[in-house]
Length: 298
Image 1 (cartoon, rainbow, N blue to C red):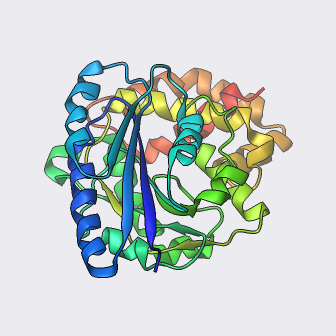
Image 2 (spheres, rainbow, N blue to C red):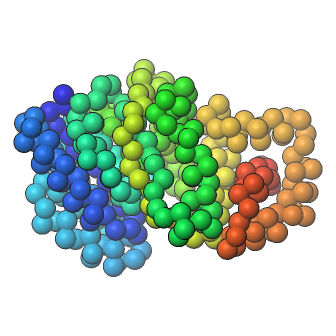
Image 3 (cartoon, rainbow, N blue to C red):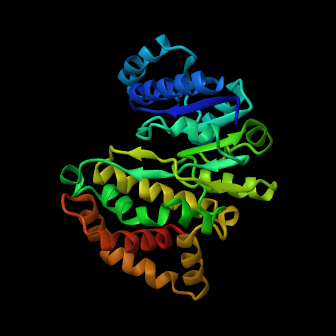
């Protein structure tokens, strides 16, 4: 039994009130049952839409909640390091602020879990009728069976994600997130690799948070391309931890990159129009990711 946990939530341009209220309610129940101490620390990473900062301020009224409003944007890695330093307790649960906790025993599962690093995973929520033409929803839904706790344990180190996980505070302080990652994508993969290299075993359990809101297709395509650029920028550090990187490296080694770049110049724009449109073909998504990655490979 973990006697105290700091729940640390980075937020940026999103609502987090419902998530924080749910965590507070569950923490109170676990506290009453086990004599459990907790805090919830939310750090707004200088959201560009200040309406989110204002609307989320109601969480300041809740017991054991601290709401930290940063005056400068730190970035995805640095804000997590900041939260680890701010936390009071020896155990941290990181949860992205735009997600939903739907399991009634979510907090209890982490309090009773074993190991220095425990990944709870994600589940895909939302109304299929509402999101059936949303690219991210369709992609995440197709991949969901491969992300069960049982499947994640088969490649435990490579399947680490920061969306929802428990870690000892000392592990983060000794192995901080690489703050060279300024843009979207893969900072969590490298963090998992660093933990493994430091001797921490990564355990996966069935304790998901739910994704139930999704970016528009154009925004998701922008984020996808940003992640591909991040992957290329840090390809040496991420070697062996991304199937897209491994396949791209093989094609470069076989001297097929010029051909792929030519194909991208010919059909890349039309593929992107389809994937950004109102009826995207999911079968084209990984093709586009590969061609785009090779087009920006330097």
